[in-house]
Image 1 (cartoon, rainbow, N blue to C red):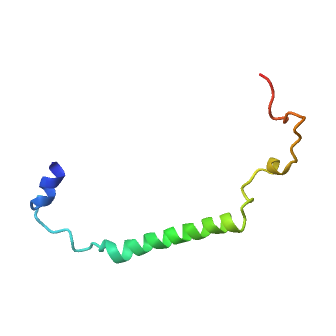
Image 2: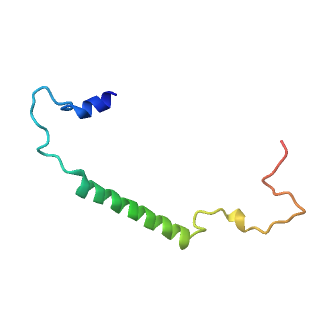
Image 3: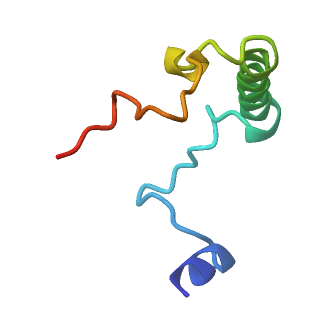
Length: 78
């Protein structure tokens, strides 16, 4: 309720009454473009890792042939 009342009325202002909108940048062209560039770079790097180097962060134990008659050495009784 407080946010609705705050934004419906004149809003909150400073006690001096001086407008602070002089050195502000609008959000839409500047920060939106910067955030979209960051997202595209992240997606590009992630897709390179997924499609061209999928085993880069993998474990080498994944390539050891499994023996169904032997328990893996990592599994030990307590």
